[in-house]
Image 1 (spheres, rainbow, N blue to C red):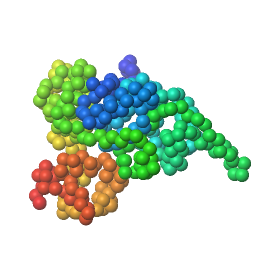
Image 2: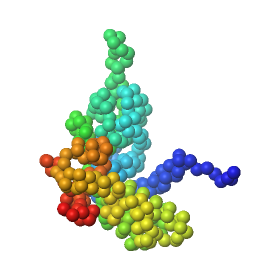
Image 3: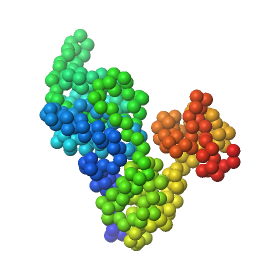
Image 4: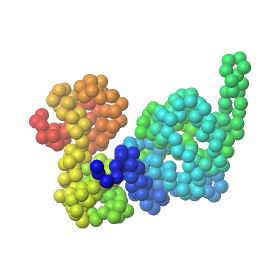
Length: 332
């Protein structure tokens, strides 16, 4: 019988979440990149403080892992406000939203992640709450039902979404600030890796930083994930420094190439090239060939491939570009 402790998946997840929390920037000074967004937010925060009012409702949108949640946390800290966090899928019934709104205090911030997944009934309940700080509740059913209105304190709603196109126009128009988070440039990604390595106590060479940054898909979350895995490698190998060999080995272990493409990215490109002669091919055909949901292809796989020029969208469908053939070493 082993005398060692059993470590279950929830324990490992908890540890990883603790590391992620340690790496999360706590203020604008620590938050690298997105300078335009930071500048505009700072202006809004300073103006709100001078008026002694909560900051206006904010919407952050962009690909996953770019720092939308982190920005919401920083705004709350800068405003000295309490923040309550939920997500669109969690708000299934009007009572769920009412329970949260009714517990807000003056100046609180309500952060709703995955806002594009809020159902329409919940969304309509948000309109008067955002505009006039009123919560309209229907008490009872049928002929005996009556409307009750509760006054809400001044609060700020911050919403985040990866699919801003799925938000209705009436909801989007109620936000006083709409901010798109773009992919990061390689220099900022390298700075993020360097900062995270210092927090984790990892010695890493400049060459290794460049290799990891190139495979990070211009995304801080992925950069930190790769750094954590290369830290694991050097620890089990009893090494002292993360060098370029360690960085290359981790990418190879997880089947990530030098551009950050993973197996599913390459499979998508190979499918377009080999089964559909490079395209153009419709999204439905690609979905059927891969056995993947259309939304997953459109939201998860395509954005980065479009960003680095390996995939092109046309009115006739998707096309694998010359760069895709070159990267996969395929003949046209």
